Amino acid sequence: MDCWKATGTTDATPDTEFVVHHNLTRIPIFFIYFLDRAGDIYSYYGGMTAWTAATAAGNDGSIYLKCSVASANYRIILF
Image (cartoon, rainbow, N blue to C red; front, side, top):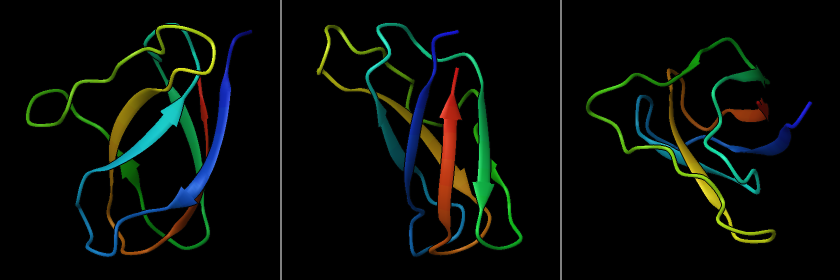
């Protein structure tokens, strides 16, 4: 299975878009996340920046997400 793991901190303002970079040479189709506090990470189609694939090894693709709480530390797995 092809996947990518990333860690980081969400934006300081709840429900603000933030970016997660990956090196998958395709657009991810699903993600699983873990937060250090109660909250949700979400994405919805329409109104958010489109996800992209990495074009070559070492060339970052990106997904754009939002979180319901401010400054939460996350671990995410992209598939």
